[in-house]
Every structure is written in structure tokens, then in C-alpha cells.
Length: 153
Image 1 (tube, helix red, strand yellow):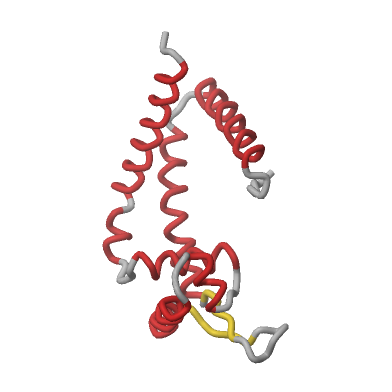
Image 2 (image 1 turned 135 degrees about the vertical axis):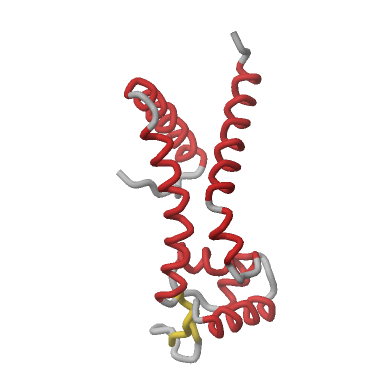
């Protein structure tokens, strides 16, 4: 029987293997993207947070405002981001995902979900039930550590 540390190491290795497999199955979609990692992080941030000012984007990404401004400008030119007026302060402009940007991020996330779904369908019912129980316990631990974690019911 494994000791606790070895069991945890095995689980972490399994998670890495799953992530690699998902990456390999969606590699073509990622290769076709003509975006820098910083641009992709900006899109993900806007997807998760909604419209943000340049300063808020800079803070969320841990970069300077000039860099954030440049990133947003490139994404606006590419059609992934639009600019809107801040309803609270009309002097300030907000960046938000365009429908094209929203579609891209949803497509990237959907590829992961579809692959996981295919693999889960291959498991028998007792294994699925055990996996659900374990994942729920992990979610509960994560929520206790980071209370702001939002989960679907």
C-alpha cells in the first residue's frame, strides 16, 4: 500500500498526464491561433471578469499599463476585443470581448470538455461514482482554502 505522500504524488502525476493528453488532442486548434501568450491571457481575463479598464487589465496580469494598452490595441485590431464607455465614469474606456473573442475562448474551453467527456464515457459506473466523490472532496478542500471559488451546482 502506498503511503500518503506517494499516493498524492501519483495523483499529481495522473493530473499532469491528463493535461498532456488534452493538450495533445487540442494541439491543432492552439497551433492555428495567431495570438501571443500575453494576448491569450488578456482574452481569458476579459472572459472571466467582463469589461475592464486598461489599469484593471494591467493589475490582473501583473504588467504595466502601457503594455496592457498595447495588448488591448492589438486585440481590438484583430477583432477579438472592443472598447466601450464606462457607464460609471464616461472619461474612462473599458475593454471587453467581442463576439469573436468570446467564441474563441468558449471554443478553446469546449475542446477540453469534449475530450474529458469522451474519456469519462469509457469508465464504468462504479469508477465514475468514485471519481465524482473524490473530485467533490477536492472541490470542498479548495473552497475551504479559497472561499471565492465559484462552482456550479
